[in-house]
Image (cartoon, rainbow, N blue to C red; front, side):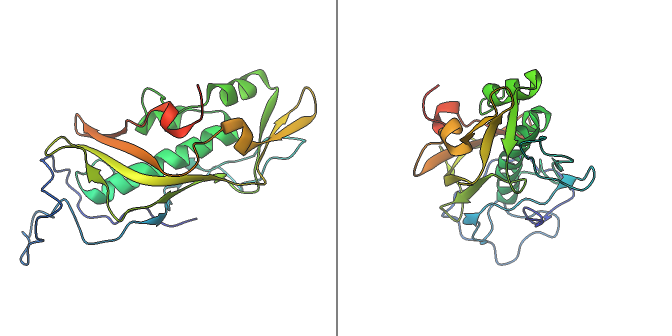
Amino acid sequence: LGVVAGSVLSACAVSRPAPSRTEVFSSSPSLTEEPFWNSKDYSGVVKFGDYQTVGKFEAGTVEHPAVSTPIPRPHQTFQDYYVSSIYSAVGLWVSALNYLLLTGEAEPLKVIDPELKTARPDIVKLYEDETGWVISRDNFPIKAELLAPHPAETSEDSKVFTWSARLNVDADALVFYADTKESRPLADVLGLQSGEVQLQIAYVEDKWRSETAYDVVYQGS
């Protein structure tokens, strides 16, 4: 996808309550401080472009798992208290979840989801036991589409936001089981919730964190 998620709005982190979404944008903003909200429409497929490349990516096959999957990394303004950083947080979350699916590694996901609420231990175990892996033609088998131009505050000054989204799985992506040489569609294995979901992002101790629950994303436990 190769597109940087969110504009670089400031080099300095600013921690303050978010103004109401109904507040009129200032016609003469401060030279040293940007408003929390902006007029950009963030709806559409989430794009993320901050990766550490580790070689030429090679998609997984029945012979081997994916090779040199790019590692998602938060950019330098990721923790700034702006709506653009919430977009970056969503981008990091879905990118890190994809990285887990292709590698079994959860470390990038811990950056945005420290408690690994949305991790897939069944997929991680496949890699740990070397009994299977995910086969996908690219490094983004799951895509997130935001259905609203901005997130919504759960309550005034709570620093907790929800964002309406839809999650889609590549219909051609598979989970390959090396011990039986069989495969299942990734969509069936993951059991993503159909239709609209509410992703929850919170600003906790000057850091953006995903607070989305497992059952918001997946069917069942």
